Length: 222
Image (tube, rainbow, N blue to C red; front, top):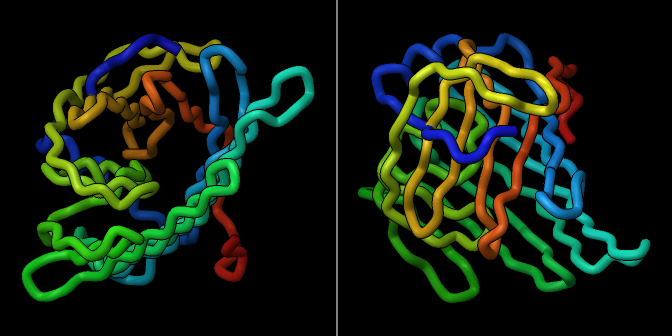
C-alpha cells in the first residue's frame, strides 16, 4: 500500500453517498495490518438501512503476538444510529489489554452529548464518529473518537481519483486526508465504499484493507 494520500472533497461526497445506498444489510470486513507485525486482526462494519434510518455495528479484534505470546490485545464493539446524515446515538465499549473504555452518545436539543468516565460534554449536532463506513461520514469538520469519545475539530481534504497500490493490486480510488491531532487517510471506490483507510496509533500507521464485502440476511446482524 502506498504511503499517505489525501481524503475529502465535498463535491464528491454526495454522489458517492448516493451510490452506496444498499437495498440489503451489507457487511464490510477489513484486515488490520501493522507495518512490523503484519496482519494483526479484523475490523467489520455491518450497515443496515431502513428508509432514512441507518444502523452501523462495528467489531474490532486485534492481537499482536511476539514469539507466539500475545503482547497486545484490543477488542471493541460499537453501534451508531443515524437519521439521514445526522448521528443520533452511539454506544461503544473498547477493551485494551484488559482496560475498558465505554462511550455513550445521544442527540439532544442543539447538539450531541457524549458521556465517558470523565463526564459528559456537548458536541455540535454535526459531529460524526471516526468510523469511515461511508463517504457521508467524511462530510464534517468535527469528529468524535469511537475509542475514547474525544471531540476534535478536523479538516478534510482531497477527493481526487488516483492510482493506489493496495494488497498487491493498483486501483483507481478517491483519496482523502483527515487532519486533527493526527493524520488519517481514506480510500473510496466509485460507489463510495471504503476500500482502505489508515490511522495512526501511538505514532504507528495502521492500515485497514477491505477483505470482503457481502450482503447479509436482515437477521444476520453480529
